[in-house]
Each structure stands twice: as structure tokens, then as C-alpha cells.
Amino acid sequence: MSSTVLDPTGELRPDTRERVPRPESLNGLTVGLLDISKARGNIFLDRIEERLDGLGVKVKRFIKPTFAKPAPVDLRHEIAASCDAVIEALAD
Amino acid sequence: MDRGGVRGDRYLMAGALWHSVEMSQPSDSIQRPPLPDGLVAVVKEDCPTCVLIVPVLADLAERSSITVITQDNPAFPSIDEWVVHDDDLALSWHHDIITVPTLLEVVDGVPTRRIEGWSREEWQSFTGIDDLGPDIADWRPGCGSLSVDPNRTDELAVRFSGSTLTSRRVEIAALEDEWEAMWDRGWSDGLPVVPPTEARVLRMLEGTSRDPDEMVAVAPPDLVECTVEKVAVNAVMAGCRPEYLPVVLAAVEAACTEEFNMHGLLATTMPSGPILIVNGPIRREIDMNSGINVLGPGNRANSTIGRALQLVIRNVGGGKPGGIDRATHGGPAKLGLCFPEDEEGSPWESLAESRGFSADISTVTLFPGQGPRILVDQISRSPESLTKHLAAGLMGNVSPRLALMFETVLVLGPEHMSRYHDAGWTRERFLDALTAELTIDADTIIRGAGGIEEGMPEFLAGETLAKFPPGGIHVVHAGSGAGLFSMTFGGWVSGGTGSVTVTKEITP
Image (cartoon, rainbow over all chains, first blue to last red; front, side, top):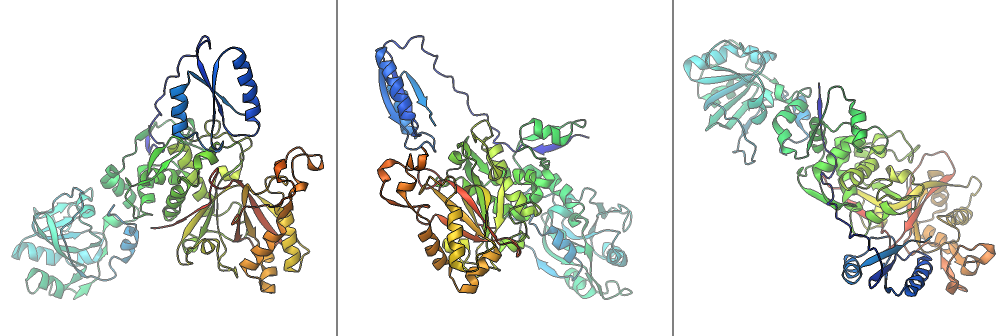
């Protein structure tokens, strides 16, 4: 005999959001560099910035208030509104 | 839910005494099948009192008008048009028949008055008819109604109340193993889970007065609105008994607060999770263990309440190891870690009292922490010596090179507590002395000091640092009476940038 149980989950699959297609070139684009506030993430991003500068790419720097919490919605919006691509750095 | 957790109790009580109850119109929205108007008696053959009053029922049918509703044998008390068989017990269930015989006056399908058991005087007064049952005893108590038989209530609850549950039904095929099926769906933390059938979930919901559709919290990481029903489903799976549900509900509320930051605690690479500490009368009411092996296995409430919270985060919130949970090693707090304080054996105020709750209130405190670690001291006889040694042990929490960032729970064992009790130390004196011992010359732990690159930033050189932030030592008394040990839980990032310890009152 079959049995019936109740679904213990939230019963929602989070809406899958399509990523913006990966740019073929960084020419003329603005790239955001997001430091999550973990030790030495800035060292890594400084180097990335140097490399991007060398390619003539415009760079904007951002920093999360704490690596322990998700980025505030305002910060996410600012990055999305002002950048064409973002590099989020984690270092440990 | 108007079907409280008292049905079994009512069954045991039924028949002890007959009594008259003035009925009010039901105000809830449950669709009740109407009873026939007029005089109605509910009986079952398997009740000596019902058998005794068969002549009275026949007499009433002849001299007045009565409908007899029989619960078991459709031919009892006779095969007549005034006898109705309540074969699925729907009439008895929906009209709250507790005892048989019950005599009802019904208007517009709804009982307006009722008496239970047999009393000639009461039945004559109720019906206005004299000389009822002149040849039988004056009174007899009734028996329990089949609709409140503990062996049937689960099935009846599902049949008549199951529609109040809104969770998606998942059918498991006859040839499927239930445990394997639930594992395959990703609902388990790796241990077996109890299948959350409708009957079990309804029984779990009897543990709270809250409605199944009431929202408890928004569960991270997927930010799903989590209802009492969803908590009950996961509490069933974790192995909880219904009386634990209020603790689980309070724990879910506490975990999902902004301050506790369950999302961050789940996602961190550190091995931390919510550690649940229960205070107040409910510890004893649900038979929690605060003594021998308090942080280990063996007690159902200790073992399942924390697990239920974690299953809510996993299943409702969607937080799973390898997904949002990025723990490098993980630890027991991620499976579920819950224990009560031994308040009765402690000379000091409890953890909850120290956090502003009175002793007669039940609470659950959530601390963001790791697995426990022992602090051995079998030699110290003075409180001063023991305090220095405990402090030395606490210096190692998380890392001996890091200070001010992490709090701790210190579980004093009874034999260590007796050192302070015997010397007349109060909680305040202990904490002052311990805090004084937990200061560090920053020069010894700044980066590079002693040839170790990890440590506090160089700008703190010359400072004196506290190991723990102010209020960051949470003292609890628990453990067995043998063993000169205490235990410490290391913390996770404390305060606004991480997680703040949260205490919630447990309500019915």
C-alpha cells in the first residue's frame, strides 16, 4: 500500500535568473571589483585593478560591510546599475 | 484547530461522572454534518450503561420521539427507523461526543443541550417524561465514545481535519522504501527521518495552540515564509514529540531574527551552528536531561529539538551543505545541539535570568557556536585556582591569537560549581574574577609575535585586550555530579557584523 507524506520543503524553487552573457571583450566596459571584507581580499583586488588598468578597462571598487552577511541590497543595486561586469574576490 | 491535545485525556476521563453541559453554537468554520432535530441519544453496544438503558430508549421512541445514533453495531439497540448507524463516526467526531450514552437536544442540526451517562432524574428532567427505566439502577456512569478512542483518533483526525493542512502531498509508492524515498528527495541530514504523515503532523500540531497556517518566520537562505505547519512537519521528521513543538517554534523564531543572522551562520566556512540552551519550567515538563551526558545522546528532547531547527533551515529555508552551507569542517551544532540548564542544582541565577527573564518563564537561548571542548581541572580546591585555570583554557577558544571577536558559552560542571558554592562566590564575583584573568598583553599576540604570523593587527601593540567582548561569557550549569570538568563552546563572529546571541520566550 502506498503512503502519503507532507512535503517538508518551502515548496518553491527559487526563480532561476539568467546571468548576463559573459562579455567577449572588456573594451569600453566598466568592471566592478567587490571586496567582501575578508583579510587580504584587497591585496588580490589591487593586483586585478592594476591588470585591468593596463588593459584600459574602467574599474570601480566596492566593499561589503562584513563578509559574514550577504551584500546589502543597495550595494548590489549600485553595482548592477553602474557596472557591466563584476569580479567578487575572496581571499583567506 | 479546535481539536486540542486533550482527546486522549478526555477519553480516560469519560465515564467518570455524568454531567450536563449547556451548549453554544459552534463558531468555527468546520463543516459539521447535521444531526436530526429533536431528542438524540448516542450509544454503542460495547458499553454496559448503553445496554442497561435499552428499555429507556425504546420507551422514549414509543412515548415521545428520539433518534438513537449507534457507533458500533448497526442493529443496536434494535433494527428500527429511529436507529442511525454512525459508521464512520463523523457525527460523533464533529459533535464532540466524549461519552456514551450522551443525550442531546438538537435544533437545526446542532446540539443545544446535552447530558452524559445515565441518571434517571437527569434524563426525566431533560426530556420532561416521567417513569423512565423504573426497573433499572438510578444512575450509571457512561463509557468513552469511540470517536475519542486513542486507537482511532489519529485516523479520525486525518479523515476529518486533514484538509486543514496545506502542505503538498507526496505519495510514496508501495514498493518504495519510505526512508530511501525521503533521502532521495534530499530531505534528510544523513540520519533517518520519521515519515511526516498527515496523522503524525496533526498529532504534532496538538503540541501548540498556534494555527497551522500562522507564519513563524522567514527562513533563510531562500527567505521562505515558514508556517507552524512546516515547522511541525520537520519536527516530526526530526523525531520530536508534540510537547517539544513550542520549543522548536521559539528556536525557529530566534534563529531567523536579523540579529542572529542564521544565513551567515549557515554560510560561514567556520564549523558553527545554533546551540540551543533551554531554561525554565518546560525543561522538566518535557523531560529534558541536564545531568549525565547532557551534551551527548540518550535523551529524546535534547537530541531532536536542535535537529528539528536544522531540518527547517535545510528543508524550508533551502540551506544545505555544499550549497549555501560552505563549512570547511562543520560540526555537531550543524546537525542539532540542544540542552537544558540544571537550574535546580545551581546556586546561581540561570542563564535566562541573567539575560532578564524570570525563572517561571520558559526560554530558549540560541548561541552561535562550535562543538564543545572540555576544560579539565581535577586538582584545584580554591575558587581562585580554578578560575585561573578555566581562563587559561578559554584563551584557546577559536585561536589563542585572536581576541574580542568571539563569545563563549561556559558550561560549569556541578563539581566545579561546588568550588564556588562552597566558597560563597556569586555569579557576579565569578565573572569579574574570570574576566580579569582573561586579559591579554596585545604584544604577545600581535601578528608576528613569537614567530607566528597570525594574530591581532599591529596597531594594537601596547594595548591590553579582553579575550571576549563585554557580556561575551555565557555561564550555564549542567552535567553530572561526577567529574571535575567544565565545557566550553567557542563562538562565531559576534555582534552586528556576525551573530548576536538571542533568547526567546517559549509560549504554548
